[in-house]
Image 1 (cartoon, rainbow, N blue to C red):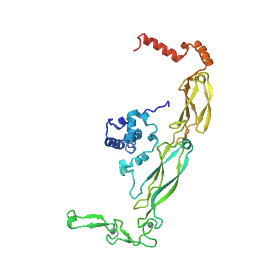
Image 2: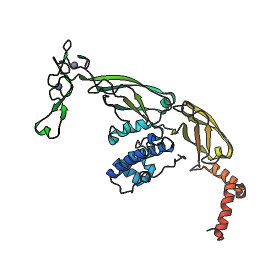
Image 3: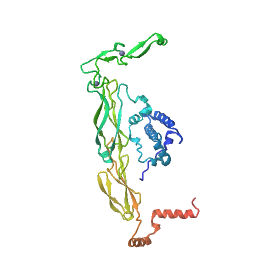
Image 4: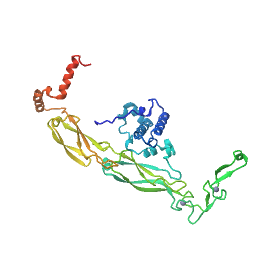
Length: 378
Ligand SMILES: [Zn+2]
Ligand SMILES: [Zn+2]
């Protein structure tokens, strides 16, 4: 495709040499994530971009296969390997993706106490669904409250009773003996395991755990204009906490299937269309694909190879503003590989009329060549 984004070298982004070990890659990313975290740089809007740039570099360099391809072929080698487009992801989403790297307390943005684990899943969308938005039914299994006891672990009708060992506090104090050397020593109560209560009769469906594995079906609304790698959060569809009642969230990450014609560039769609050299020279009306079907495109006489034409409003909507992008059609000019005798004759007749002096590109080139051969140019 004609449009290549300017991308910095991943090693340069992370400030590493090409020989960096996986541990050094991890360290460098952690350091940069701290430094460029948007919460720490409220007055510097570019911090977020640098954070995202570092995230992408980390995804590639921390994966042995992607790193090898990048080392051999550069950015172009990563086509089709599923490297995410971080530019449109929320900072929170990126942190939750790399949560194992940052731990739960990184900037306090992780899991809160008394809240269950987040779950994540992935859905694949076509570009067509990106244009319209989509609803996906997601079926998954998660640890949930037991139906027999509603999550308490107690058999129906039975009650919890306060723990006699700790008097309901969940903690016990040791003094004297070895502990006496250090003064007071407080530990979780061994009888009730720190809960402060005991079950009089255990629920037989969950054997007192209060939890059961359950199938869930959740409808997820995916907004139009979403980008590859972005996540949709469904609140409260994660797992319940072991103590406490607040469930984690379900993150649904989007992958966008490659389209036979279109490549996405933000809200615009890029498409290459071949035309013949006579169409380029004489002008023509050609049929081009659009996301919703097809459109007619007028190619003016004298169109050069690589020229780009814009079909306004035929792109994708912006996920926030809803403003629709354009379709950009880049023409490639096909030169016939074989000519029949009549065609060749016609072209030779045409060639005899050709005057290189009136073709601006050629004229410039030949003048430069003359100067070059005369030693005027280095
Ligand atoms: Zn139960
Ligand atoms: Zn106790």
